[in-house]
Length: 84
Image (tube, rainbow, N blue to C red):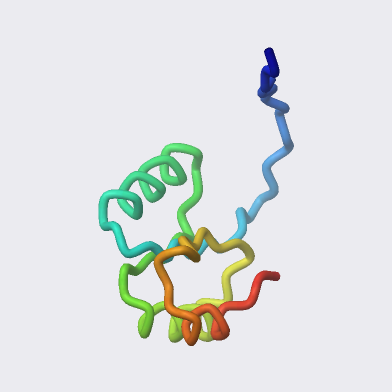
C-alpha cells in the first residue's frame, strides 16, 4: 500500500519573514491560515475573501508568497493571478 512520509526540516528563519497573501472565498480557511502563520511567527500577512480586493492587495502589498484557492475563482479572475 502506498504511503506518504512527511518530515519536518528546521530551516533558519531570516530576520525578516516574507510577506504572505491569503485569498480564499471561505472565511474559515482564511482564519485558519492566519492563525497557523501567526503561531509560526509570520506577522506580515494580508488576507481577503473578495477577488476585487485580492487584485488590489496583489499589486499594492506585493507578497512573496500567496495562498490562493484557484478552484473558487472565475476564468477572468484566474487570468489576473497567474501562477508564479
